[in-house]
Length: 324
Image 1: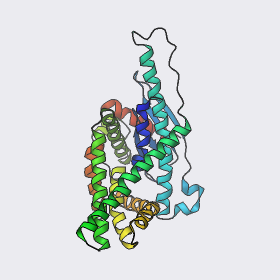
Image 2: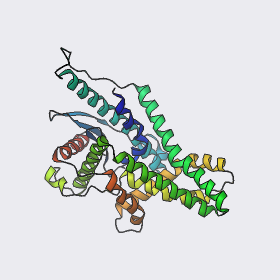
Image 3: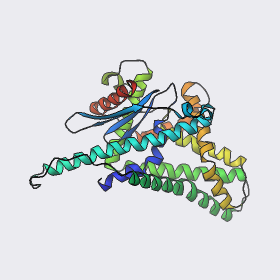
Image 4: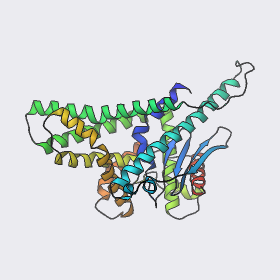
């Protein structure tokens, strides 16, 4: 597989929540030249080839709650859904990366100076490569969004001499949010990531189209916003807010104890954040909606207006997921 596709797998740890959904709502994730969609009973990945055809995979999906009863409980269900979303995200990226590699090889084989080469064949991405890329992605995210903000906050605490745990966690949260926004802005400057953000916008429009109970067509999806309250961008912003509250309730004196607790409490914080996102999506007029507002604003970076072909791809993915 071409090395440049590894960054998509490394970024999975940041985009893992994009596919979050439950037994009522549908959700999805943008991949390389395509979209993954999740329905109540299954999932599908549709990747658009240069010739206009689609490469599609789909399968039934048993939720974590169906396998283990504990994941039907509040907070725990969020942990289960988000864990499953991470696994699906990796599968979707693997499939799209393999398709992209085939197209790259096909383009090289038809180049004027390529000689008589055999047609490109699908290249399977090693499971070890995927696991390694995912591990690197998770490690980088923890280092940037957990470790670095914590030590910067500790430095400020020493310089300013304050002892308030609430102030400490508030400053820590501000650093985390700032680094997250900076990270999103940085990757948005990459040309190929701009394409992914267009497919991200197509996924949101298609989900809105479905939720409005209108027929899945480009003309119907086109009129909807690219900003969706259940987007992973909104989720990660909610995580930052919830973490400030949780870390203020769990007190540790040393910086190393704080670091260990922040990593250990990530599943709990993710589960609580999921409940906030879930509630705000089902109760648009509630005060919880204000918590998701910063994430909605950040979608100006992570979503772009898609073209009709990208909308067709998102619609194809959802249609296939609904027929599983």
